Image (cartoon, rainbow, N blue to C red; front, side, top):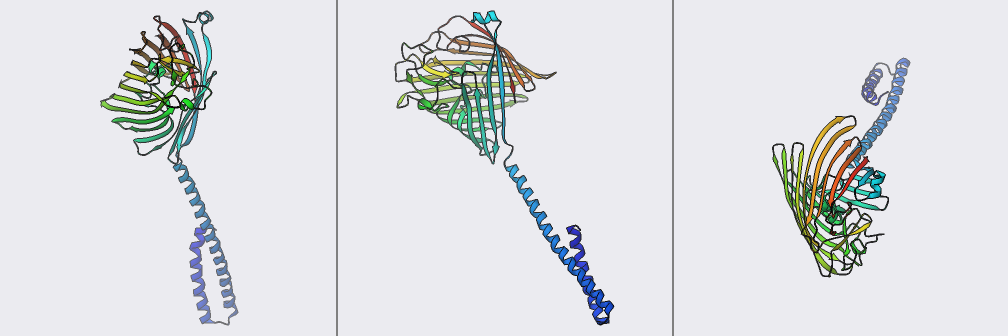
Length: 432
């Protein structure tokens, strides 16, 4: 019998039994028939009392089970979505006019990378991390813990992306802008960062203790095995621009601020901002100079169109005679001037499309210029005209690169070439 039914029946039965007992006693206590009836009622009353006890026990157990289920659901709600993982597998096709053998082969197809991402939140604590494997090295892109203090303010500690300029990227192509190759775009560093994101303002404040490789004394296989370009040393007079540095050095205790104001004009959006940083250059024992940088940037979106513009000035003030700063990334060393101005201008058009698996196309042209180089005469110029295709989990870049003195286009930012190089590149990846 269900517990609720038993609880309703028992009080009625008890009352009936008591009334019957009283009437029987008054009429004829010695009557065998009435006595048997009384004994039967007393036996039934005992049975009902036992059933009541069992029903109460079952009810308590049901209530306990319901409480446990509620606690489990509440705990799951506290954990939010948990930690999610994803990643990508990418390949690319390359055809470059500066590689005669490759031109004769009709270009080369090669593996690009395999990467894993971990992102999510548990009990209010945020985790975000990404690691990448190439054929010639592996590298951490970022890895940090975080916490949302309010709906707008977030703190991060670990290997964070340093705030600078148009974010998250001052580019649309696979090759980024030339800012990337000097450390001013999508550049990780080890430290702490606070960000504010609202409808009107983006604010970023960061203290970067050292680069993602642990600075000059970091325990790494090579200072060149990095996702982005870190200061690895000071280029001494007479050294080759691609040589491993004889005098190691790295950035230390760098303070970065980025402030951006966001304005809306109907469906159009404009963001204008300023970025600044100041830090020390350390050789592992002592300070050997300082670095300062200033940037102005803007991003404008109207309908399907996007426009970016940015200016950055940086200056390494070194105490040692030099011919530039050594940077390391992608398993090789390179050289950049100790001072220069960087300009970028980008335009992109987004076109939604429903054609088989194809969901959207993005057409873009990204232009970068590095000029006013201390100690070097020739500018670095890169123009990337391309198209990005999104089709399900596959994302493909078609890029035509025209450049001079540009890394990954047969040049160096410290180069003095006057000729142009052209590279056609298709990078396609499956993102999961």
